[in-house]
Image (cartoon, rainbow, N blue to C red; front, side, top):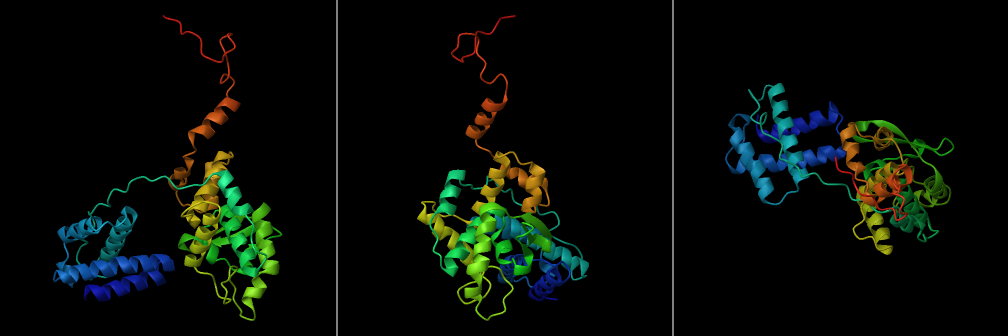
Length: 313
């Protein structure tokens, strides 16, 4: 079987048997289409013609053209999974990708905005139109509940239980989690559902919470544009939905929330992923230390707060 046909079968397998998300399928589909085309340019169209050297050359080419480290890592993961699939389906005797290492990805701290910037963003004037009510609710829910853009656009009306103050969110791998929604986020969402959504929906039977101007489900791209636009109004350039998710997590931890609780709220499988959000700034740590430690403000009796001389032994 040719690699191009095997690629199609692998994507079908991911969709049907593994239940991979549409976003994963799109990304892996692009990665493997590029991989198969690259091999075809070198005269390799069958699984048996692929060896480790070719795969490593392909990965090096991805790095050389300036592909983001995270995109290169995802592409290598897609290639590894593709070759494992071909071995399992007896299309290949062994996987030449088995020992290909994932490229080192630099550790990058998440972008966050300050509590003050978040307040400026959410407290700015919003139009009382259906779209204005929707946009306000989008920003409040992203920051107040820590949702991914795809989780926000995937919300259906039946997933919202404002009397119980919870959302049922479908996260990565189609895993559902319960997220609390309270305070200004709950009020903004309630106002949109009461006074905005109906006008956008018209007579169209659409289950989605967040709708576009035509009554259909709002896209992730539209959410990105909305967040960026309102951020620009208050002087936050390049604001991204994920920045609001990062800020949600960081501000919870700065407020004293337990790391395991934040892990559950974010829907992280591994606690190591959540630990990226423990980059609380030094000013905040210093303020907590000064307020909490019994000897943080101790003096040597001189009254100036400076440490006294250290004795010699």
